[in-house]
Image (tube, rainbow, N blue to C red):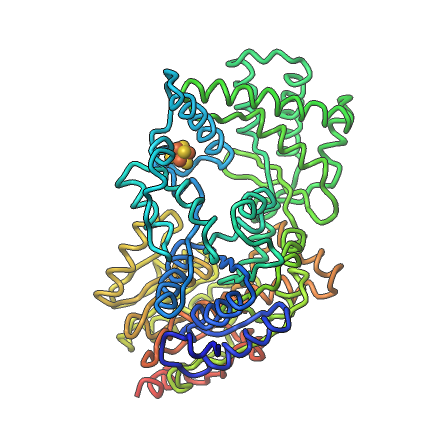
Length: 616
Ligand code: SF4
């Protein structure tokens, strides 16, 4: 069968070419990195050939997303495809979103704690079903066991629909979710189900296909390198050490090794706090053996540290179990510290040790510099398709993940004349921005906003820099400002008003407005980008650049430019979401010209005239 016969919509520009590129990679069993801008219909173009190929070759598909809304979008397209071909597809989410019992405990609960509560309750329920009198059971689990034969659900179903079904009948939605994964040939899941070793193993114990019989699709793939780095990074705070000392007292832990160790650790953290010269971003790199050397001075060798860490985990487990049986959140600070040192002792030069200060809390952590450690699992799949609107520079993406892949890029399907990108010479936020430069940039912003009554989004490099403009600007339009402390509902309300009433929105690059938010048609027509969104000069960023210099000889391009290019493309991508959308982006920094290879743009000698011409 030709994949075009399965495609459920009228084909738009470049869609046939994208489908062909995917089909080629599937046939050749090669990884594909695909950049295609918003509006190309990437999801359906990738799913159609993959479903056909998987069917013909008895394979499974795992479609990975980073957010729940992307997961919903994939399920919408799968439902459309299911009208033309038979399939079993399911959205998968973790217990944090699927467990009715745990949902009311709030989000500040770790997966480990959830697992503990769940297995304890399930055990009690199994006993109760055998006729024993038990408390702290899970009624949702019991109902699932009693009535699972009668559960009837659609062949293509989202995790939200499963949750609703479970809630209405008091069934455990997570158990239903697992049951549906077993029968599915397509699963839409969060990244973590594949890149976390433990969850991946669990997942493949349910899924009917093994990795080498599975096609992996990664949506919004530009997030993957950072996701992998974060996944393998970990930290320990002074607050946790103090809580562990209290925990020992409360639960009667008298082990001298542990008690002495915790007080020594507290002292070492205090010394680090006093001695370290923190950077502007309140962090610093500490030497590889800083903690170990300090411990050795107090006669705690590496072997002894390992022994203490193991003991802390055992005590922590017991404490968590006691808490669980008393219906208290099974959290143990001792266990957290034990696990921290277990990982700390196994580090190599692919991690950097960092100390950070957050208000009065000191944090010591290990930051993973190399995403290819987590992404090496990609090699075990039949092949992987990585897609996003912002993957350039693609060589960096591929090298960072350590994969062999074909790189393919498609242009926007919409009329070229509907979008314009300008940069302004003689302006930069490079180094410290003096008042003269602030004045110059402010003048441009005021002129544009007061002359063109079109919905305008202004993106600053940081909240600090935005703060230098906010109170000085004279903009005679309705003004909306994204504040750092805004909760999700505050920001959504501001966006709703901005879309409805119009005006000027002030926000930051990489914030909630510059990525993942849709502003179709006249909801957004002008984007002003102030400065170049290079990552801030933190200790992590410095270490990352050094590491990439050593590994690829290209630290600046791979760690600084790559991030700036993607952020600019993401921000500009908000402008054009459909055939008839029009929009102009103005970058107020002459350094933007460096990125002309990746972003089509031109210099503007008279911004106001150029904007007038564009909207004529
Ligand atoms: S069995 Fe289901 S409802 Fe019960 S605790 Fe576990 S995940 Fe939650």
